[in-house]
Image 1 (tube, helix red, strand yellow):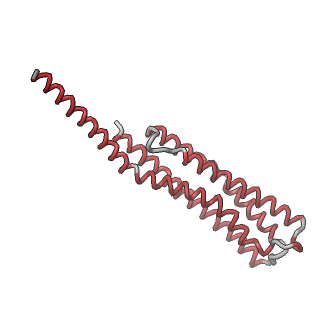
Image 2 (tube, helix red, strand yellow; image 1 turned 135 degrees about the horizontal axis):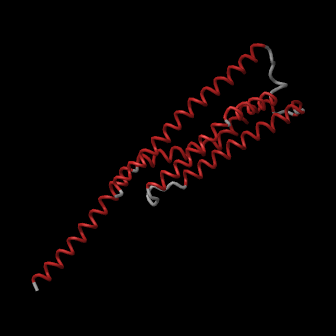
Image 3 (cartoon, helix red, strand yellow; image 1 turned 90 degrees about the vertical axis):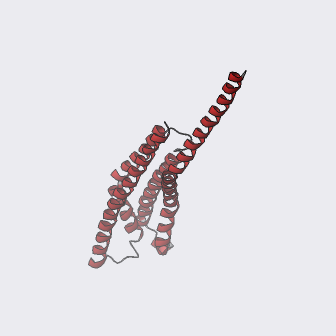
Length: 197
């Protein structure tokens, strides 16, 4: 009878130990996944912010040109070009947001989470391939919208060219910085694999 009692006590403590080990792993995972989770939330916020702010910035900056006397063929073409680029950029940001929303560090496996972040990275890289084209079309659209308002002398033309170059340069710099953050996120999520086994 004593051996049976000892076995029962041993099994009881063994199950408690297993339970404590599972809780410990869960706490370690929660603690270690905070940093990647913050980065994911920041990237989701960034995409949502871009979806709402792109149209707002353009409307605020061009509101002076939205007058009846400015409407002509150039204005309409400029509006169509600008709206098409804004629609494209907002749809890309929405796709990026939806992709990041699918990443669930709590329920997905580490490999699945890394795969989803990799899909997000490929969306960012594909969007960057067309950034020179979208920037050119957007600038052309804005110029056509403001055609009757802006005086196109040499100084303004040089300003527009330099503005275009600065925007392209800053876009490339921001792309490199952002892809570095995505790669860092992938690495941090991959490192969580050590604690799941």
